[in-house]
Amino acid sequence: MLLDTPSLYFRAFYGVPESMTAPDGMPVNAVRGLIDMIATLVRDHSPTRLAACMDADWRPAFRVAAIPTYKAHRVATGDEEEVPDTLVPQIPVIEEILDAVGIARLAADGYEADDVIGTLTYREAGAVDIVTGDRDLFQLVDDAKPCRVLYTVRGIRNLQTIDEGFVAQKYGIPGRGYADFATLRGDPSDGLPGVPGVGEKTAATLISRFGSLDKLIAALDEGVQEGFPAGARAKLAAARDYLNVAPAVVKVAHDAPVPGTGLACPTAPLDADRLVALSDRYGLDGPLNRLLSALSSRAAT
Image (tube, rainbow, N blue to C red; front, side):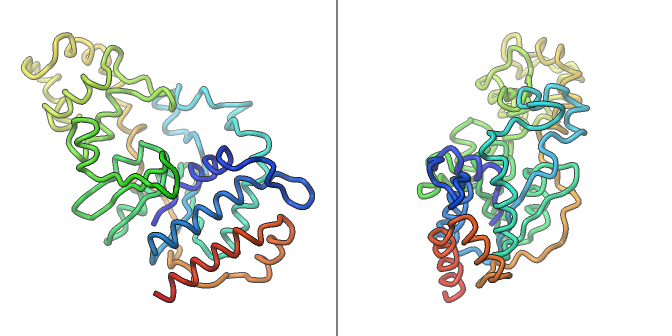
């Protein structure tokens, strides 16, 4: 089980009231919410291996070099991500707790959490569950592996299972074609322009007809006329420069330098004394006890 940790702690931050505070008054709503999310996931899905994937760089240079607008609207000052003031101090607490519990916390210099997830997914020989609220990771679903996304859009207790069949039914594209589809359509939330004039319906038609973006571009360059909806061919030709660089931005990395840390799901805290100190400091007895109980119960099954 691979956790898109930033996606989850942002969801926790906005889903749990800021009135949840440490004894000194510091908000710990994201911390408490994330711990309870992980406890629920462990209890409901019993993963044997578990990793909390993190952003080492939320806006990697290689993506910005290709498309300068990539996540530009989220920049606060300099090149720092715009994060709510009361969430910022909670992130180091989350990291300390993950380490004390013994849940592998993995990042790679110059890459996002998505890239860590992509790399671990490609390394893993067995089944993979990816927990995220980010549709970008739909590109990793693979029924043969199998790899599926447990999508948090309806909440952690009502996860939506995304596989190739879901992608095909929802978007009208081949089940493995989400990245190609997203490249054409664009994504304003990430500052990806897409091909001007090509919306979701036309993007789906193109990927479905040609099978992949590579085959679509080959047909475009070879002068093929058949298979293009009215006006689409000219729009694609005008966006040829964008199509040269966009796939490297949209597709998650498969070869990020992720450490080969063991991912065994812990059965007991790695550093019990440190965890007790953190629990006392931030008032986390309830959620941590629930997490430790879930981990212990998984080990007993």
